[in-house]
Length: 155
Image (tube, rainbow, N blue to C red; front, side, top):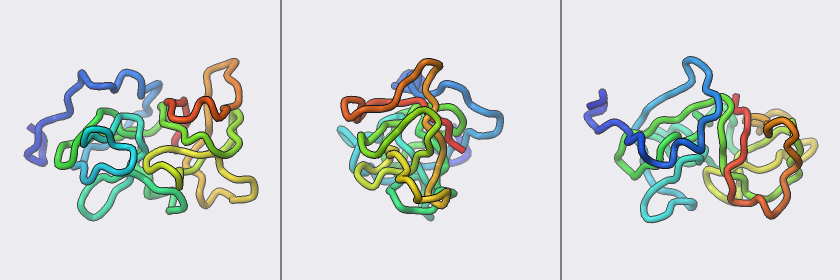
């Protein structure tokens, strides 16, 4: 049992596709609330960007303070369950919009809660949550990659 009186996350969900490289001290656990636009079957899928609200973790929405982003959901979860989020080099769902080339800045998507989008040129660091960080030899994202987990560096 956790300090919240809820069971710990189940490690046999879809988490293996999410974590690439976590940095020490960047994992946080909190109660998950709500199930946002990208939920399926009442679950929030691993790979969604999460933020803290006064009641617990919810999916991010574009145009908000990037400091509110706690990280990416490591295990799928349902409202009321304990959820773990991490930062570092992780995989996150991409919304298919914006120009995303290796090393370009990313932001929370305004189209799909919990996903990321390319940061519009001239938007500045006030909306940046990290960088698109593909593996060596990785290329720019195309519309065909929409809805797929992509490696990013969250700060």
